[in-house]
Length: 75
Image (cartoon, rainbow, N blue to C red; front, side, top):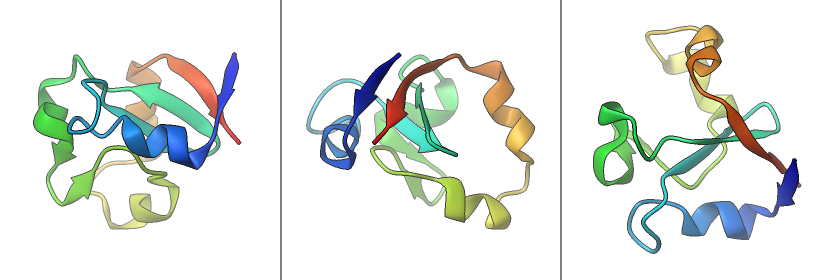
C-alpha cells in the first residue's frame, strides 16, 4: 500500500480534489462512493483528516471501517 502524508490526505476532502478520504488508526479509506460522505462531510466530521480521536463521539463502533477497503497508510 502507498503511504500518504497528512497534507496529501487533507487535499482529499471533497472540495480541493474530488476524492473523499479519511484516515483511521493509521490507514486511509476512500469514502468517495459512500452516500454518507457527500461533499466531504459526514454529520459534523470532515473528510481529509484522521478520524481516530473522533470515534469516541460517534454513534457507531470502529467496525464501520470494515465495510471499506484501505487504500493507503497515513505517514
